Image 1 (tube, rainbow, N blue to C red):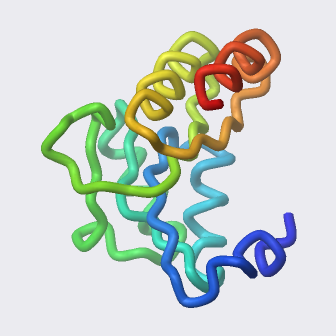
Image 2: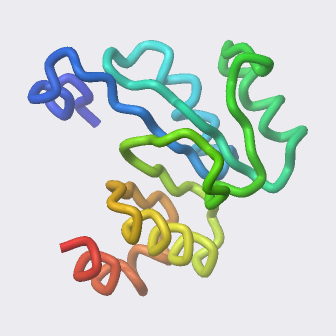
Length: 127
């Protein structure tokens, strides 16, 4: 993905990301985010706390300085601009995307099975 083109219109605005799922795709995004201007991983979410800590450490991020949660829908969490869904679980992916769209967040779906089955419905919701 060409991040420079993607963020060209943002200029100096920082895009705050809520990342759900820190498996292969999510961990890769964590590592890459350190070199992408205007992109800040604001929150990471996974059911496995140790997996989050490991992914943060492996990516070179400070696990103590990174907000981690097991529930991205917790209303006490800080705001973010875009939700990156990388759960690998189609039902959870669709549910999380629906929640984010309902709160006016942009959504990036990495779970292709959910995008294939629920993508058109989620797209209509987002419109």
